[in-house]
Amino acid sequence: MRKWVFILIAVLVGLVVLHKWRQRPPPPAAGVLVTGAPMQEDIAGGTRLQLGQVTLVTRARFELTARVLSREDYRFDAGASLVPVDLALGWGPMSDSAVLDKISISQANRFYYWHVDDFPIPRRDIETSSANMHMIPADDAVHRALDRVRPGEVIHLRGFLVDASRPDGWQWHTSMSRDDTGNGACELVYVEDIGEASH
Image (cartoon, helix red, strand yellow):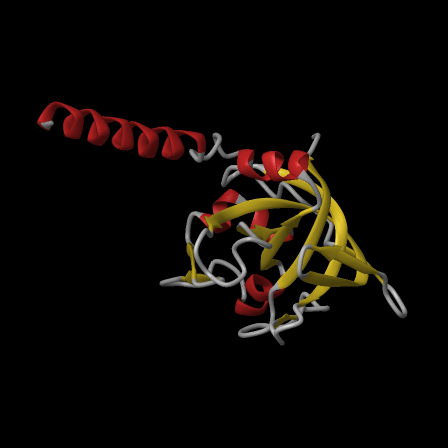
């Protein structure tokens, strides 16, 4: 019995190590890696998409190239079946390794947090050049692609900003601006395509 316990522990440790290895950041490149801001085209009226009990209403076409600052996977909260992963993304000065080396970044409970001892760039530039985005994979292929995303990578994605709701009254609304902060400032993104950006 003890032998099987040790084997189980070894397997679990191995899975944790493998997960950490898969999430290791690539070697950072110098300078600003992403010059453009996310592109958004608002949609009047919107289209309804049904994912099981969840209804999505498209609010805007959305496309971006960004550096992955952090990722957080979710399995047990109320939105995990719809949004299995959040990505903290940066562009402009927030894609520059020299800037990011001076900023501590983390994610928890569907929020993205940053801390500095001394500001390498103005606070407002940090706020408007980065965001926490909730990722809804459009299909299994996108889900697998999201699983492969690592912090430090530069990715390109396209899809829609959406609002989500269920018949039981549960709702989740997307931010429609990159200028907001705090509760409600995260984008809810229905991802149709995602991959590593070409340089």
